[in-house]
Length: 121
Image (cartoon, rainbow, N blue to C red):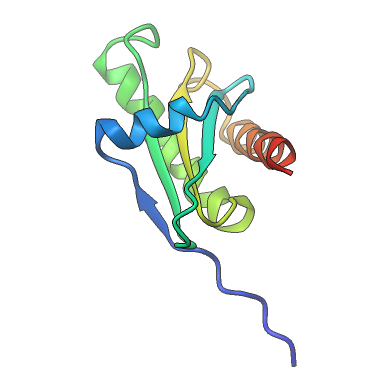
């Protein structure tokens, strides 16, 4: 009986240097509901790092917090299945993130991951 590999564990990016390292890799995929930046870490650890951000352009604090919460849930639903092990990602909220229907936001996240994976190959 063949077993499927266990999904990579997901950890949060929390510090500014972690976010800047992902941004410095200059790999990004912009879709309707979000912008996803990514980079391979190259440290041999197979977990997936994810960070979330929303600028003041998105709206006031209530709107930004809602957008980040929605991005966290979309990442939770998608990353363990479709994320690349050993990579760090930063999800950046856009104006549409807060109001986009959740199934569409998940599809946007999957599409952005696929673009970054294609770029990495």
